[in-house]
Image (cartoon, rainbow, N blue to C red; front, side, top):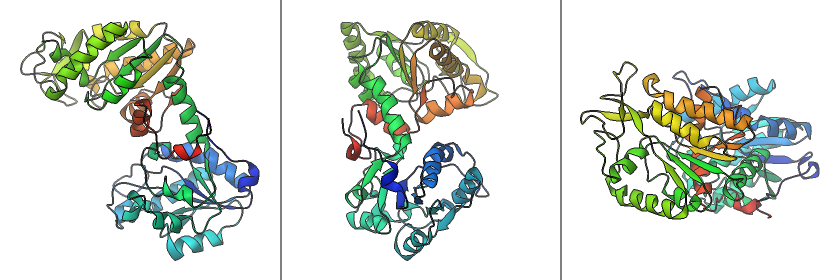
Amino acid sequence: MRLKTFGKSDIEGKKVLVRVDFNVPLTADGKVADDTRINAHVPLIRGLQDAGARVALISHLGRPKGSPVAKYSLRPVAEELSAVLGKRVGFAEDCVGESAQGAADALLPGEVVLLENLRFHAEEERNDAAFAKALAAPFDVFIMDAFSAAHRAHASTGAVTDCLPSFAGPLLIREIEMLSAVRDDPKKPFALILGGAKVSDKIGVIENMLDSVDTIIIGGGMAFTFLKAQGLGIGKSLCEEDKLAFSLEMLRRAKAKGVAIVLPEDVTAASEISESASVTVVLASAIPADQMGLDIGPRAVESFCKALDGAKTVLWNGPMGVFEAAPFAKGTEAIAQQLAKVTKGGALTVVGGGDSAAAIAKFGHEKDVTHVSTGGGASLEFFEGKTLPGVEPYVIG
């Protein structure tokens, strides 16, 4: 899949509206706690500055429900971006109207302003055409660079493209290139690693990818639904009772297609989730009735890693356990390490955003894989085979 991008003549000296994802965590005193998402857009911003564009950035932050909420203001993000760029970034009190118009008109070539939170207006999430027109009014060009918002048909990702000449930014293009290589043309053998809490979150991915994968590795909370579906006792482990039949059907279909399904042979179990929890390693068939599985065990780590040996393409979506707590982090850390190993051996490895991205970053391997997606929900929908509203306007092949 190829996307329409811009050249220097499209942006030089022009007022450029850029949709970014600055939905970053803030500390209690209103400072940016993690600037990963900010840094992801820096190459584009610097490139626009170097080309003499007059740059206005738009983003959402949190869920203010359609009206201004002080704690969701993007002002602290403008301050952080100023520090990252080493150059002052302006801030406008609104993303539409006189404030936005004045900020855009005041821009000199190479200058940058961040407009206030899009979601202070309910019209944003309604993909309102009039609001999109107001967003676009002060500008000459629109660039979409927020892959993590591309699965939402909002005014700043959808309707705005009807108002301005519109292009895909480099972050969006990189995401689509990497994710397309996995979804549409994976090199074999292809291994899919699924984890996280719920089978229901991954149904679309399993169904859409079943014809192209060779191996599906299932860990995390969702594994217990598959285990219970086969008649095993899972104690108090997470289980989606309404997905037991689906799990059995997927196991049947995978076997019929020659796809190997790898489930955990053992798990790390405890009666509570805490840093001081007393843990036991038990077979997946012998989880105590008063405990819950909270991570894969050492046998599962060995079998999961063995299943990844020799893989040429690997997609990972979902942690193997409650990795945020040290007693239940070993399985997820081991998968991160194995991905780094197979990447070094020449495999294309993609981490599908969300908790998986947070996990691989926590264990220091985000630079050791081919690509870490910036969009959890967007990447899931992409691998489900869905059309992303924030990508569709730029598809040229």
